[in-house]
Length: 212
Image (cartoon, rainbow, N blue to C red; front, top):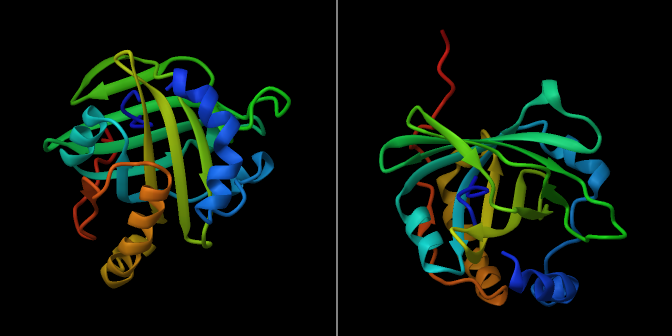
C-alpha cells in the first residue's frame, strides 16, 4: 500500500518516543483503540488528501488520481485485518493486499503493524510487497479518518499522512475544500512537506475489482 507504496525505521524509534507529544502538540485526537479498528473499517474510505516527508513519496502521490481502502470482512478477526487498497496511478490500477495486526501494547504504541509480506498488483502483474509498515489511526469526526503510515521504501525511511473520508462523504467538494487549510497546518505541524501533492477532485472513479 502507500500503505501503500513502501514507505521507516531509523526514525521510527524517534517517532515512537515522540508520537504522543507530537499528536498532542498538533491537536490530534486520541488514536483509535485497537478494539475499535474493525468497526471503523466497516466502511470503505476514500483518500481525499495525502502528504509525504520524502521526495519519492511525493512523486507517488502526485501521480495518483484516486485511492480507496477497505477491509476484507470475511477474513478479519479481533487482532488481524486484511486491508485492500485500490489506487489509480498514472491511469493504471495498483492494488495492495496486506495483513495488518494490532501489536502487543507493551511492545508498540502503533495502532496496526504489517504482519507479514502482502502482495502488490500493478496492472495485472502480481509481486510480493513488504514495507515494514506501521499505522497510527485517528478519527477527527465520524466520517473522517487520518492515518500516519510509516515504512521503508526501497531502503529509504519515510512517512505518509493520509486523510480519508467515509465513502459517500467524499463527494462533498465544498467540505473537502474548506478542510484543506486545517489539513495543511496539521501536515506542517507533523513535519510533512507542504503543499499536498495529492488532492482528490471529488469525481475521479476508483480502481474496482473485476468481476468474472
